[in-house]
Image (cartoon, rainbow, N blue to C red; front, side, top):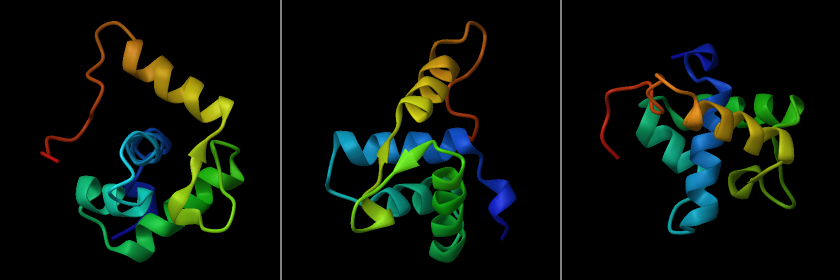
Length: 91
């Protein structure tokens, strides 16, 4: 149960999923994906915001990707030989 177990890439994935389908908030996608509690997922979102990967208006839970966050996500998803989702978990 530590924020270090959630990478910036995983946060960007969760925020991207939230942007694509508003049925869940970004922290809910992250909790389901990482199997970490909500407080850890919210802390990971805060860390990504401090690093300039995501931005938000009223609530961190409904964040969106910045250009830097989109670039990180795109680079990782399109890198040859890399598996895009590093964890073996179903969503």
